[in-house]
Length: 306
Image (tube, rainbow, N blue to C red; front, side):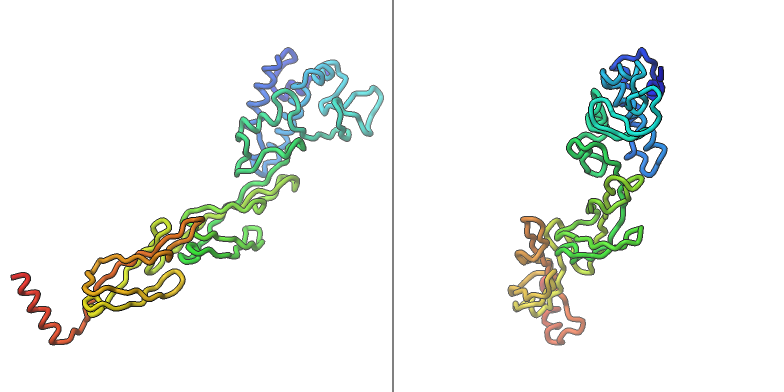
């Protein structure tokens, strides 16, 4: 009688159902294709382990296997029959020597092992099963970085990137994107092993370039704005840059240097949150002041510090 499936699991014929499941789970975890992307040998080991569990983990199939009535692939054994199409126990079929994964095959089968490995999601956030259709090998994830301008990140933009395999792809940067944020583009990563199954994902990490004048704090934008001395004393307006272009800001009379004024709705728009722009006014003394003004200010200053 054939016993190679027992040897695959490192067990003898007297192994209990619990022994079979314990051995299968331990070996399948270490050989899972998602843990060895591109490793054909690991993929084949995993298929062999799944085949062993499919047969030995099912009470009826194990009995047929132990009696020599089915082979290592689960095909019926007919003396003198050598080739052609063979029926498969429990319904379904496969060509001679073929094998297909089936979800839930055997007690505590393939589905349970994936859940043990990754919970209800495959690595990279992808679901492990597609209904009852069985296991699909999945390509590895590909990582990339994308430098984005400060205003592009704040307002959103579409950037074209070149992938390692030479393909070009338009990446949509969402409004309010943050430095270090990773965008996941499903199905744009590495191909599945052997070209079968689903491709992996492309993970794009954003690097936000600093701006010469703007600083960001959450959804608010900060800016230092020089104000002429005359405007700070008498009041008036100054032109202030924003994410959407310049606007006019009214400066009250006798404004002190360091005063912060708020431009509502001029910050970062993210989901349902709209930030503001906070403008810190910095009084700018003239390099060559009017002599009369300079003398008057100096007399005033000396009187205050005497």
